[in-house]
Image 1: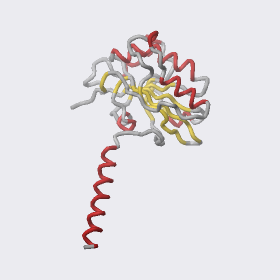
Image 2 (image 1 turned 90 degrees about the vertical axis):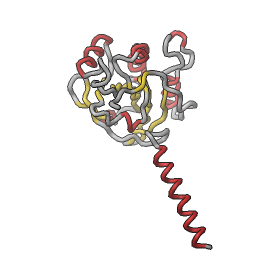
Image 3 (image 1 turned 45 degrees about the vertical axis):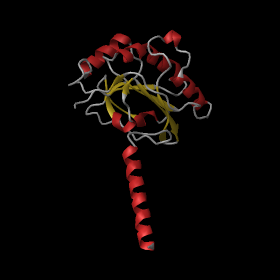
Image 4 (image 1 turned 180 degrees about the horizontal axis):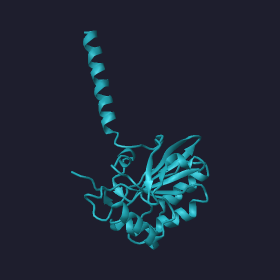
Length: 204
């Protein structure tokens, strides 16, 4: 009887662990983010480790063609200009597969960045190896990282603000509030919000 109970408990633990692992589809709040290296629009390779002197990094998965990404471009530029000097620069990443997402190829990325005057790196997730690690599902999708010694720790996931279509009507600025909390040494009061945008395009 004791043997049966022991086997039963062991099976329950195994099943629990299996489902826990299966459920993890990307970084969670508090996780350490692994270093990555991707190609920037200027042809140079950019790594997360290049920002070891920053207080943190605002990683934004975005793209060229998505209407939501376009609506947020000016706000992303404003975020970089405002918070880069405070230690939280923006790093944008295009996660889409250009073979199934017309206009999201590397050359179009360069053109879009030049047209809009991007002030931040715009990296290409060639082979779509980075965005799944973050668990990004939309463009735009924001991940704010706080540097702790040599590690970058995920501190916020979600939307930029609460009005995608009209910046003037956005009265809750999630990213700005999160950055201010982190600068003050606190965790954001809201660590996760729902990202609103286009789905990331990948081959079926």
